[in-house]
Image (tube, rainbow, N blue to C red; front, side, top):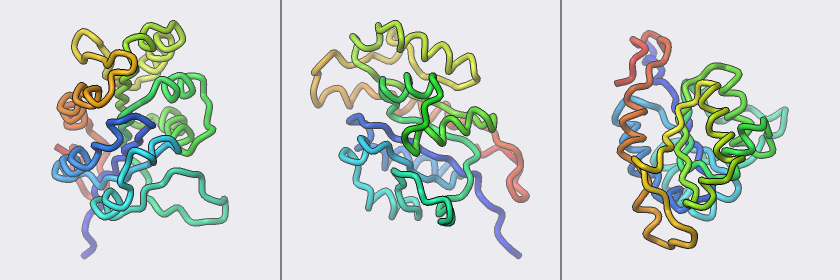
Length: 193
C-alpha cells in the first residue's frame, strides 16, 4: 500500500542574510510533517548552502525557471513561506511581476488560493517607504499572512551588519506555519500539526 503524500511547503528565500539560516527552520517544518522544498531568488543563492539544503529536503534548490518541455522536479505546493522576503520582492510581488521563479510561484499561489506567509525584514529606512507600506497592505488584502510589525519584530537599521540576522523572527514564523491547515492530501486529515 503506498504511503500517503505529506503536504508540501515551498520555502522561498530572497537575497538577505537570513537565507543562510534556513536549515534549522526547514528541519522544524519537516518535523511538523511537511515535505519541504526550497526555492531561491537569484540573489538569495549567494547566502545559502544549496547542497546542504538539497540533502536535508531531498529536493534540489531551484532558483530559475525550467524549460517548458522539462518535467517539474518538485512536487506541487500546498502552502508557501517567503523567508526572508526582501523589499524588492515584496514590491514586485504586490505589482504582479514574475521576473524570477520565486515571484512566478508566489503569483500563482495567490491565484490558487494557497496559504502564504511572508516575513519581510527591510531596514528601518526602507520599511517607511510608501511603496513598501502599500505593497504590504495589498498582499494582506489578498490573504497573504505578512509577519511585519516593527513594534513586535524589530527591524535592522541601514548597514547594521551581522547583528541584523539575529532579529529575524524565526519562532514567530514557525508558530504561523503550525497554524496552516491544508485540504486532505492523499488520505491525510488535512491538518499538518
